Image (cartoon, rainbow, N blue to C red):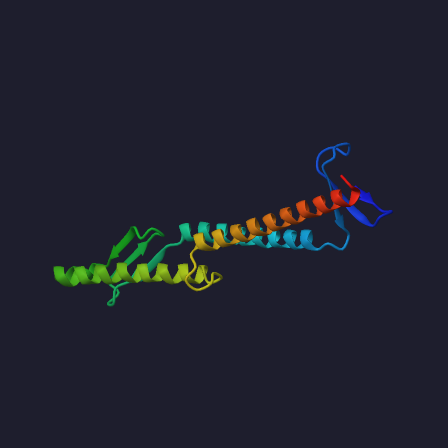
Length: 163
């Protein structure tokens, strides 16, 4: 409810007849700053959520040095595809083993490269969990500060009215 005669904004907490009314000066920007922080945090959390989904779908592909073996791994480094060329049948067992290891390693490196590119928006060394926790802490701190500010203004208002 707006009290236009005093130039103040009255926020009703509950019914208009209850005494849970907080008065705020019209030029008070703390609420606006809190709203902005919440919106930025929501955007960051959506980005983090999308990045987590994209990471789960990511796969890496790689070939051996000679190209006779190719491999594909999933986000959790599970080998899901291994293709061995008929030309590889001419190789000895140790050489073929090296080719398989090269292909799987190349697929894992490809996956890691894609994951790093996907998470390039995070500050260096910060994990998805760290980023989520940072955003949540910022919102919590801002909310706590805003709540304490409102309580202080309520106390001052009541003292001013002689309650």
